[in-house]
Amino acid sequence: MVAKKVLSSEYWEQCYLQGKTRWDTGQPAPPFVSLLKSSQAPTPGTLAVLGSGNGHDALLFAEHGFEVVGFDFAPSAIANSTSNARSRCLSAEFLQRNIFELEAEFSNCFDYVLEHGCFCSFIPELRPRYVQIVHSLLRPDGLLIALFLVKGKRDRPPFGIELTNLLLLFDDYFEPLTLSLALSPFRSRKGPKYLASFRVKKSANPVNSQLLPVGLWTKFN
Image (cartoon, rainbow, N blue to C red; front, side, top):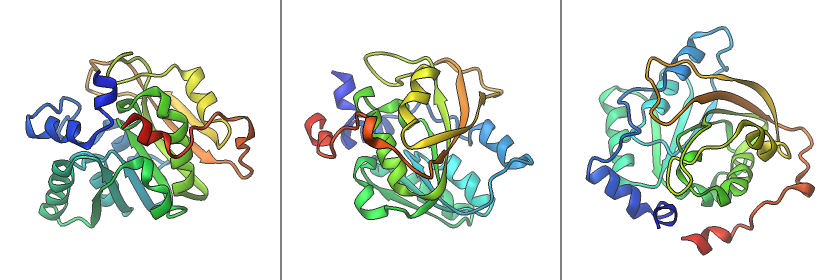
């Protein structure tokens, strides 16, 4: 089943080796470009990019003064993004990691987490764990900046999520700051995306959340 296969690094590595990377437009997401040019642009700081791919979004933020670390499952993605950074003389680090295992190594290390395409790539059962991981990576008052796909597929990536469910999913750990339809010159083949920002709550309340235990990743892998 494709939904289970996407939990392996081998699946994503084969996508890169076979050129099956339709999600890669060859440039950073236009909503992120617009954000960084606007008066609402976030102040540069440490930034984790989850599922960084070939590094287009990560390097955009590096150009704007952010201290960037990109994480991806596929060795080829790490090699490509590292090469792209060097060719453009940009300072950014790219590491091959399972994002669900970042907590022990990178807890409270970042001012920002950047999301674009990672959230919709794994099975929905792991979404509560994803929220927990993002929260663990961020410092107090840290910010998640994200592009979320609303309408996706049910049995394989990209998996979408309704807006009401998205807000409920993050509610225990984050407060929404902005949420708007993302304007892009590209017509999405997979439905609308929303540009969102969530700030870590000063008093997180995980009591009512149904977070998956850390070991659940192993169960699905």
